[in-house]
Length: 591
Image (cartoon, rainbow, N blue to C red; front, top):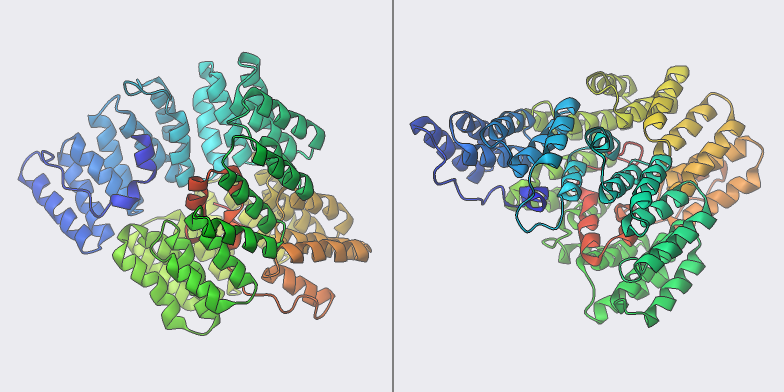
């Protein structure tokens, strides 16, 4: 049931009306109005009518109202409906989970924490082999950043004498929140109770990778494989890949061909390894082989289109994206196709690529609206992009993601002080949010404004997410802006070791150059350009220091949305591939 919640948006426009929902004519009339609004694509009207109906209806109606409002991203209506549902259905785990999700989305952290604690004490469905916390965690991660999810879940569960599996779950959340030290502590706690806990051992290996401790990471990966050879078959290959030891990862994957693991999964991981390391020729060959063998997923086809785009073959890329226009990765495919069409000056075609899908998939309207605003801003029409967001706020009142994207586009358009004002307002409402603290700090640093305060904001974010490459990069960048490039270099180097992001490499190289290490700067930039020749920030930096060195790369396609797919199953990778068209602002501002 909780897993169904995680994908509730997919059926928001087609779920049948509750049969016995109404208590009196008003509820029935309001329900009919809500369903009519849904059919007409009026998500706001549907959400508000359903919330009013739920106020006088039964639990089934409140459940329906909660799901519609959350799928429509109408947060006030969702909160009204889910509060009613929870009150009418005490002990209903689905209601409690939804309540926690909406509370978290509205940054009502005490309410979210209390609901998670309540959920953990409620009885799991008969026959269930899980306590449901993993599914709850997945749902919450859809609605908030990992640091905030970790904060509320750890606060709710730590005092309850958590089981090894719960500790391992908190460890995995800690990794998502870029807190390797905390992940290690949780994993060690789980292993004290259950020395063969496979999830905890994998968490431990990834924590060591994040901390740069290669020997212990490799040892933990081997231990994981020994504890459960089937479930952890790829543990060592994943660690080698994460450590950027590409050849050893390749050898380990080749070795696994003689093991019981599916050969198609080995081939998929080899293709991902080549793509991540910048070897597009090998990646393209391997993904094409998966297609030929009939083992290709939608995400493999998406990679092939991305590779064509990076190679500058726009026609082939567009053909590939169009084949995926109604697939499981439709949002990513359409967004990337729209970006290529915009680059060709086909504005009408680009916008139609998004609008057509929104018309037939109203449940995706919110994400597509944000994607359209970014697309317009990225192609020099920030005013229209901001207009799109203003209209979106009318449909989705008080939505922080829309305000956040407004700040990003305002800064992009050179309206820096307005951008800062928006971020200041958001941070005032969510004072402990490391995403906002980092975003505001970096924006100030990028424009050499209030540098001491910028550093204070960034360090506050780092305290909540100490191994975040984005925040480490911000800290290095503000130190560089403050005139201390030598102090900036190790921070930027560490950020890049955790995430091979081209913008981080641009900053790292610039700090090296200013420190008198021009050869090292060239080496860093060359390696990053080989991985991501389409990075505009990297090419701009190269153009300033080495004129002509950054030219000739293909336009960006958003392929970096696939980072992390190496740790997923084939089905998971398909889901990950669609993330590129969702609520993902630029890397500087992770959601």
